[in-house]
Length: 282
Image 1 (tube, rainbow, N blue to C red):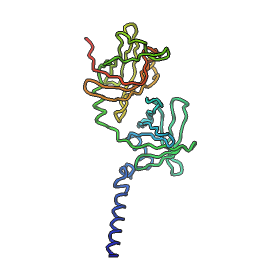
Image 2 (cartoon, helix red, strand yellow):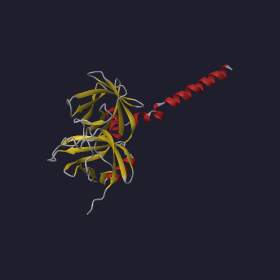
Image 3 (spheres, one colour):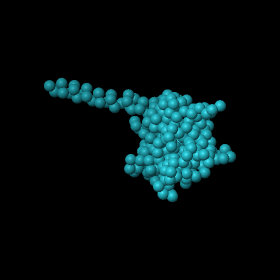
């Protein structure tokens, strides 16, 4: 009986050790590649993956960050009102005394720079700000190269028009929109295969036209529209729109509508916009 107990205990220990071996079940042992240095492995992990940002003291607040090989990172963060904002930053990895640090330089707002101590984990990457000691984590969401994104990019290319009344009806003078629906109001998009887009919105008496660059985040969740200034020399802002539905002849976006001219007739609160494919007359 004693021998049977010892044998069972040994088998349990072997099975437990086997199940917990990082090489077998822990996010490919932090993406493997033992021939690479730690710095190169973490850099590859950052660039090849899509990350959800979790703040330790964020009260459930989460965002998304996508790292690019050329040293830029796209941050998509909640604005507290149900919508999202876009922030661009630059990133690099530095090594000091065998410790690895992620340096993020923010290109907007207060243009601050943060340095985080990096620890890879089975779920992603844990970080500690060496200045404030704030802790956050990057949770691994998935690998880039989503076939769904390729489909969405191809499907979105073309001409689109809002399938319903796109603007808001105001209840006070401070609200976006008008007190009654505008006649002949329209909202149109043209997405081109070269990555440029144009948006036209207005009514019978006024048209506001914006141009810029567009892309879809690697998880297929957000459509980003980088709005150019009238001279076309710089980006004024980036609109983050959440893709709620997409089919061959229609799609639905969720956003608060803004325009370059800050015309309060054609802005909206956070809402969903439906679009159908539109082929203008030749």
